[in-house]
Structures are given as C-alpha cells and as structure tokens.
Length: 166
Image 1 (tube, helix red, strand yellow):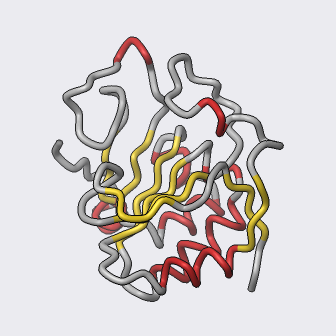
Image 2 (cartoon, rainbow, N blue to C red):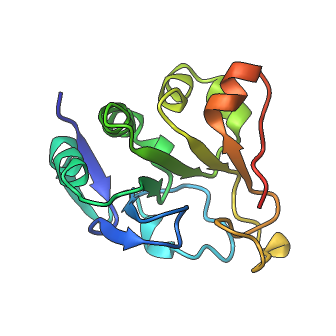
C-alpha cells in the first residue's frame, strides 16, 4: 500500500559514512527538536523538501545492486510513522539491513504502539537528540556521546537495551 512521505533530499546511494557497508540514505523532512548545532538544518521545516511515494522509494532501493543496507535519517523519521512503517516493512522482506536515526529514545518509541511496531523492522536505532555540548568527533555513526547505537532486535529479545560498541 502506497503512502506519501516528505523527504528533504534525493536518496543518496553508495554511502560509507551512515552505517556499515555500502548504504543508501533517506532523509525525512521535518523535525521539531531544533537541536543547537544540528548538522542538517534544512531538514527541520515540516513543509520543506518534497513529497514522494513510498512505493517509488522502495522500488528504487530494492533494485540497487551491492547494497549492504539502508539508513533513514532526517529530520525526524518517526514524525512520519505511516510512511516510515511502509518503507521499513517492505525493505525488511528483502533482508536489507535497516538503520534509523531518531531524536527519540528507544524506550519512548517502545512505549508508543506505532513506534513499537516500526522498531520490529529495524536493525539498529541511533537514538537521542544531538547535544552540542556532548559533541565528539571520535564517535562512529553518531554526533554526540548521549546518542546510542542500539541493536533493536537483540534489545527486543532480551527485553532490555543492547548497546552496540563504537
């Protein structure tokens, strides 16, 4: 079932900086957090960017050769839950690794019915808002030390957060 999603930019293919391996990156548009020092200010305006069809995005990603995974960032992907669910659900059927960056904490998302469902399709959640005072350029795949790389499926099975090492 097709949904509309507001994206900040075209899909970036062949990224090696937004998770392990060769990845495609999707930036959702809209974020209310307004983190000081945000590295992607243009994604904050909920009316910015452009509309796209989730089926078109899914088809583009599924047909990529040599794709290790997909990273979904923003903006705040969980502000567009229906579109996010449609994308991760279809991608997971192909076995593609899925990473999602969110300013929300893992526990917040697990306590929200839609967030809980979406997490069932995600491999790694990079959670927490960017905090300029905790910025650390030595960290892999995250901007500030409060943000965590969470192995979502291991966390769900253990019923406690499983944090991946840097």
